Structure formats: structure tokens, C-alpha cells
Amino acid sequence: MADRLAGVPLAPYTTLRTGGPARAFTQARTQDELVAIVAEADHEGEPVLVLGGGSNLVVSDGGFDGLVVRVATRGVDVTAPNSVAGDGRALVTVQAGEDWDALVARCVAEGWSGVECLSGIPGLVGSTPIQNVGAYGQDVSQTVAAVRVYDRATGEVGDLTAAECGFAYRHSAFKHDPGRHMVLAVTYALERSPLSGPVAYKELAARLGVEIGARVPLADAREAVLELRRGKGMVLDPDDPDTRSAGSFFTNPVLGPEEAAALALRAPGHPRWDMPDGTVKIPAAWLIENAGFPKGYEKGRVRISTKHTLALTNPSGEAGAAELLALAREVRDGVHEKFGVWLVNEPVLVGVSL
Image 1 (spheres, rainbow, N blue to C red):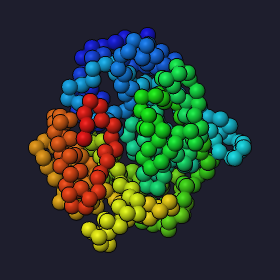
Image 2 (image 1 turned 180 degrees about the horizontal axis):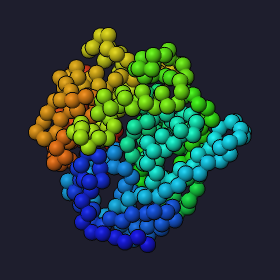
Image 3 (image 1 turned 45 degrees about the vertical axis):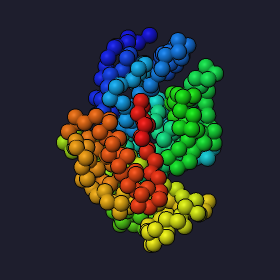
Image 4 (image 1 turned 120 degrees about the vertical axis):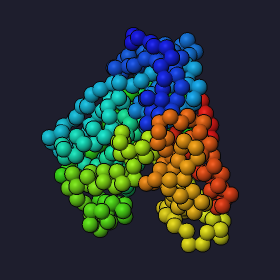
């Protein structure tokens, strides 16, 4: 079993650079080790925080009164990469501790199409199905074939199908019941093609100079996405204080017909995306800016990113979670007062609440 350390500060393990000490801290380098550590802690009734890349996490300034298990598993296995089998896709099974963007870079280099628009997203593979990570017209639910999990309720290791993962916009069955399943590995079904999936996002199509629905070389799609993300401070860079964030702090609200009608009365002509199920998705960035919170809006040592309204940042790396959440509440409450819409946080909150 891996060694345990006491009092390890968690701030360095998060992209926001917030978080107090863990009562106990360890790392798991294999699936078996990860399962054994968590199973033992569960048996002893010890609280557990499974830590990935820390890119979607806000940890209390008081830290975590339990065991923090950092996922450090490695490995990428490919089924029939040089042949067309079944539906013609390569099955790529990746351990939860692999770096996500490194995987995307490899997929682009190998000619595995389907995740290229998810370039530049920080974090580890294990977090991608939990959040149903998405950007620029793609999300992982489009390519996830199976997720290997440890079921902490039954003590069993097994595989969930994509349907069993309950994917929805920035949501999944894992988020619905966050304490039950621990992701061990993810299998992606990727098209063997030198071309991207159909470009589905207007801003990306404009950057590439193509029409919506066009396909472009994988490397071109990846580079265009990285350029767009860098311009918004969404690619980790130690020299850019705007990247000391958890990415988008709020999700885009999805409104039912009555809520959408009420918003239309308050803000005629507001931007919206009509969804196939009759709901309406509203850009949270527009709500925030039009509620009086522009890029660069400061509250003490934290601020809204100077590049992207949805990101709350800790520019100096010295502010605490309490300061960041005070800004988040001010933004959330201001949007509700102006538009009657509640914003929901995207990062996972540990030991704190919004």
C-alpha cells in the first residue's frame, strides 16, 4: 500500500491554487492500488477525496478532514488500431490518471477522430465522463463507449455502458450520485480518419474559415481550438495569471418554456440556443456581463478573468477559497436579481458551498 503523508497542502494540486491541508494524502499508481486504498478507507469509515488534475475543484481553506487519494495510474491500450472492425472505430482504453490533453494530442497524431475539439482542457482522463467534458461543439459523451468503475456501494469493479453513464449537458450519473462510482479507466470509440468531426461551433468554424458541418485536418482543428482557448486564458500557462482558474465557473443555464418566456420579457432579444427538447440554453457569459460584471471585475485578491467572463481567477495564487466564493456569490446573486435566472457552479466544491 502507498505511503500516507499528513498535512499536505492541497492548493498546489488545484489550478485555482486554493485549498488547505489534507489530514492524510497518498497516491495510487495502479487500478488495483486505487481500489484497495479506497476500499480500505470506506471500510474504516474514513472520508475520501479522489484527486485528479484539480482543474475542476474548489477546496475549502480548512482543507479536507480525511484521506486524499491522488490518481496517478497510467496506460493507453488500443483495440484493432490498424483495421476496420465492427462499426469501424478504434477502441482506445485509457487509465484515469492519464493527462487528458496529452491523450488528445496523441489521438490527433494517430488519426483518431472525435476528441480534437477538446484540446487544451486541463485535467485527467478520469474526470472527463464525470463532467461530460465538452467544448467547441464536441463532448465526451459522443465518443465514450464504456467506463470502468469501482462501485463503492457494492465493492465490485465493472464496466458501465455509455447509456448507463446518464450523460447530459455537463452532467452524468457520476455527478448525480458523486460518492458511489470511482472512475478507473475510460474507453473511447474513435473514428479512424485524418479529418475532424463535422465542425459544429460557429466561433471555431470562423477561425478555421469553413462552414458549419465541414471537416478539416485533425491538426488544424486542434491548433485552432488551442488558439481560441489561449485567447480566453483557458490553456494553463504559469506566465498568465488568468489561467489560475477552474475554467468556466458557471454552466450555461438551460431554461424550460416558462422560464425562457419570463427572461424574454426582462431581456428582449437576448442571445439563446433553442434545444431539440424544447428547452432554451442561455449563454452565462452574456448574463454575467449584462448584470454588471465585466471582464476584469475585481473583488479583493480575486477577479473575473480579463479574457473570459465565465472564469473566476486567483491571479496572485494567494487568495483563499472563501474569497473566490464571495465573488461567485456576488455574480450569481447579481444575475438572479437582474434576470431572474440562477447560475449553477461547474467546479466541484469540497468543504464549501455556494
